[in-house]
Image (cartoon, rainbow, N blue to C red; front, side):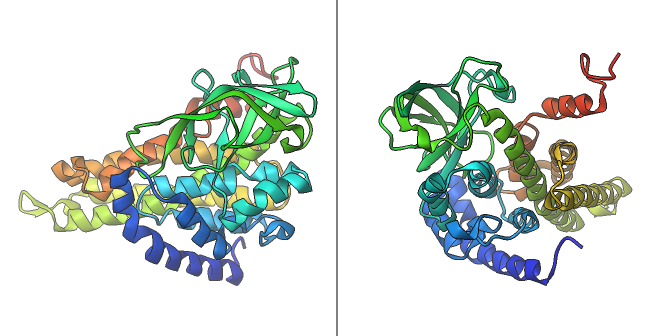
Length: 387
């Protein structure tokens, strides 16, 4: 069994925190196009939520990945997508490689304050010309004695305008593209780091997303995570947790929209009966609930294997792909049943429709997920076993 009484104790504490500290302020943050990350993360850090599966010696709880997954699922109860995504960047996207491969010195400097909530983290992988194609990034970290000198830019950086440091993927050599990259902790206050602009997004409104430039930014080589040239590999490992987190965070949000749609269509009348009484509506909602439960089973299976130390690239990729596509189908169907009200910004279904669209793009687009799966199946042209 994946979850124990200890899991449920933490889950109840997180539910209480979300109900008291987050959901009452979501509408305010959505209108402001930003939420106070330092304020919220410090409260979460004080309660131990930002380091459930991080090392005890750096302030974490030292628990296994199933606790992080439980938290990701529960964050789906937040009534917007932007805030849970920003929390996920802090816990499961910018810090897993640091916790796993960073030196004690660099973990004390960057990981410990990220767990306590004193630092806000962001991750810098995507670039204007290299989104899902990670191998094609152009940002360079040139060796200069004991330092790296960084030049380039990153795009679509969640938490970017508020972050204290960035987990930066940069080219540190001239070799093959899969072996010439490193992950480096870069303080955002470093000379030459510029937050060029805060992006105006269709959805995820309460989450700040930035474009960032690096102009001769000098950082010590000791800020590198693990070995030089292993950054691509480290990031692929980190992607497993990011993609599972992204899928798990969809579960409760999908169920919330289904339940809100049931309530609305039960009370909305047309042609002498409630909208919900139409078979096409209640059958579709039943199908969608079934799909959510199937996705949950896939995610839980992947989490069990990850806890057991197995490679879950295949299952995490499937979960990420399915979560994105289900989010698009589910929110589109539900919005239709809300009629004209579904097309207004005041309804939860319209927010979910906008926010959920990112799941098929961020952390690797659907097409990249399919390429990964086809490669593992031997059906991708040029891969082993393909025609």
